[in-house]
Image 1 (cartoon, rainbow, N blue to C red):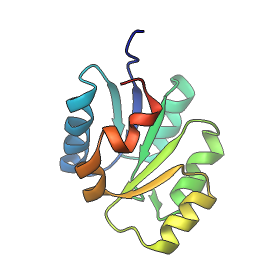
Image 2: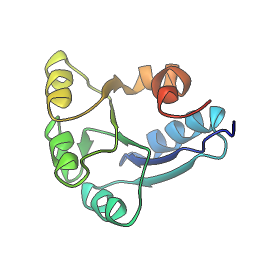
Image 3: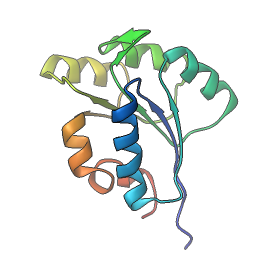
Image 4: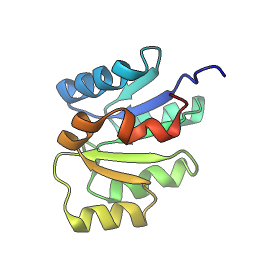
Length: 126
């Protein structure tokens, strides 16, 4: 069986964090197609033009903040799994993000420690 190549939309405005996240993903899936944008508006355009296997979403963006960011994503992207990765994840933020349609919510440090296998490995054939 052929290994699936993940097509991931990374919505992260911090360039250093975006680079670290991409490096961690490519440790396991070196051929992964990762599209990185910094704004929800850019994510909207990407989702209109392309199909993604997974969305990695930061909750602190120039045009979106908090769990409401997940809600905004779900208004235009109904089916693609969303994993929230954010610096500050409280129980309330996690509950609200899940209520608005995130499949998983993780602190960035936890994501970088456990990524990619334990975090997003279930979405792709390893």
